[in-house]
Length: 596
Image (tube, rainbow, N blue to C red; front, side, top):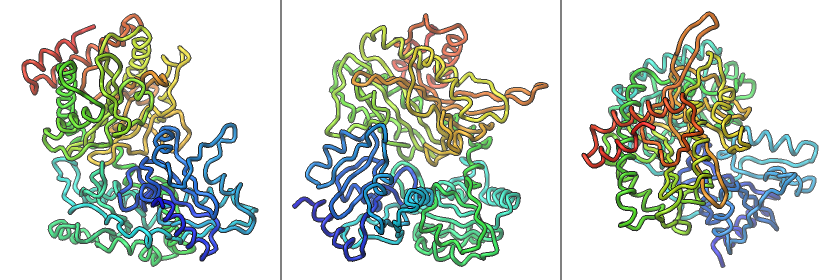
């Protein structure tokens, strides 16, 4: 019998014993972040499906997996023989897993889940959908731990100091700033459930997540004391002593909910509902005033300080050198060396690893050849790995975690003679990227208001892309890190004001299904521009450094300002990167960055 069928049978036995009619398994951990440690990858263990986005629903007669369209092909292949089916929501209803459950359960049914891995926001939605249907929801059901006998332990090695030379602000100063904001917001506590908030606040980093240098932890910031819930063995003695001076108390990770429940019911606490689990939320004492908003550290760390900005400039040079060597190597060896999407990923990771202060890639590299580039979040596997030919379009989206910053950059290059259609598409995307990079806007502008700057050229041709234009980027933290974003959406991130010091991606695109994808991405930092009688105006400075493939540009579609911008950008790329290149690489880059 297939492993999954065995496990399904055992889960259903437990469900029957506890009168559970539907069991929900999300692909998440107690921190509800983007990257899930192996210890919590229950869906991969149970089903064999390894995609990042998934939810499994189990009833006595049904087992189904919901994921998004980028994983449909992968899921169909990986679920074969498992007894779990792939569920594709059908238009026009396009119902998600929650709506499916409510539609398919009878009155008096019981839904169960592990509240440690389910956000309070999701639980509220499920409760809202079940109103008036006599369906109960139990959030204290762990049906997995006893079955998963070879479950990976929580990974990682000791935490380490993130030095002042990199971060530019002492932990005592950051703690003081957070408490000033707490006082302004009239809260006594700030519950921190995102590990990146805690790492920033305490100036430490860890190794518990694959692509982000984070330590698995929770924290409660009080007016006088900070409770840090983490594996004490991962906190070196030197750091523990420094914590003690600041009244930072280290407690076992498992005691978070218990300590939360002991807080005074007469006090007020700030929580972030998107990253606060239902289990933790239920531990907050009844009667306690709860303020729901973005955490204070999240807002503060979104604005980079002077030292961080200086370091970002340095890290972009290192990252640009690695990218230049990568693309030079491809062009010089395309006729001689067999290449595939996976081998290119390995080569780029190797070149980055040679740079000073490099830690790990900041996400799974996307090396996508021809039609694979049309899938925005494609990541090559041994089953999908394409051989790179001498003609076609190659899209490479990659980034690195360095002690002195985090990078994320996309370049699309031609490996042969591009068609007129490819050049037109590329140039329209380029116009959008330049449009946002060149934007000048008044203080108080939201990301949603800036999004059109990157889409205008595409819209005028009846074209568009289905994802946001820009996301916030952390500093030796998460590569995707709000609260700022540039998107047409109406969520809190796109409503956030863009402020000086914010680091954001600029990545318009176009995708031709079955043919190719084109995306050009740079990171941009917001700065003050000028003060006029009409207020303070802001601008962006592009910090990523890598040539843009001129062979894909239809110059007739660029206006003079756009041409000037590209020439100026390329001049900066050459000037900043060439001192670190070999003579052959330098000559090659000079041609790539010559004026249009």
